[in-house]
Image (cartoon, rainbow, N blue to C red; front, side, top):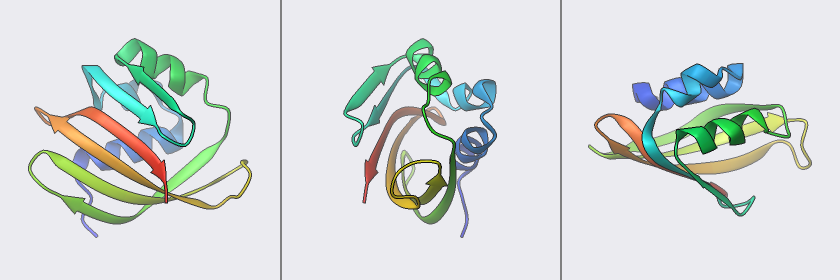
Length: 108
């Protein structure tokens, strides 16, 4: 499975809890929506705060990817110290100039 570089960086940064690498994936005014948590944040500062305050240790692994020129749909398996582990999520990523402008995460 070929993983687009931006998606690979996002997963790696998330798994390593690397805030700077994670933030480098997003545009300045990006939108991050975790549908299951009913949480939406806008902008890098809010995304950074959200990332730093993450309640769970999570390891994600892509299982399926579809890509167009400005959109990536990625299914991931998430394992960690949360109820129901492992769970499966779908990431819907909209790109702007090669960076994430909109990321929606939903349980599948």
